[in-house]
Length: 282
Image (tube, rainbow, N blue to C red):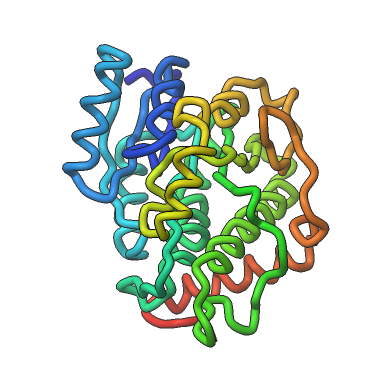
């Protein structure tokens, strides 16, 4: 690799529309660091991507978002593989329909969808500062309406898969806006993207009705990657910092998802989890 070659890292590319985001990244000439939960998933996806883009420069990073030590170790490996990071796409996510705890003792939806992506950005931030211009793209969702449950962020008093997922995506939007404001003078652009309803495995554990809705109303995975591709491909001066992009344009969201006081509280909550990753925030 030459020092001038752009390097990208993507999570959530081993299934669904993430594969098409990764394909586009490679087509733009990036070297790709492919984050996968297991080595085998990474190898399977690498093979698929190399069929799309023969000769593509891809390296696998193994990291389990449901384990904060695993995330930290994976980020350390990234630091050994590249001097700078030009693009970070945080696309991995899940939607549980029953409560599941991670090895860190945290409700899995909250950790995988919100805490782990923030940890990755935090650990790789210095590499992005070394890029000429870097972009960070979080995958959000149109299902972010409502408020953040600071009193019970893991819904221990009554778990709801929908509420857990909705809240995690609200947190993603708030964190994106906060980071964009915090680093407005750095050469890093922060954006979040709503891919729309896509035919993915996201709702595979849902009931038959939900699975049917995802299947019949969801767009193809390739179309689901369209807005991510748009944000990746646009010059930074043509993008709105901290914006929520849907259907390839900056889109209005709820008042709650624009509240910077709430955003700071979410950030503080995440830092509390990260500082006490063996248990729950108190």
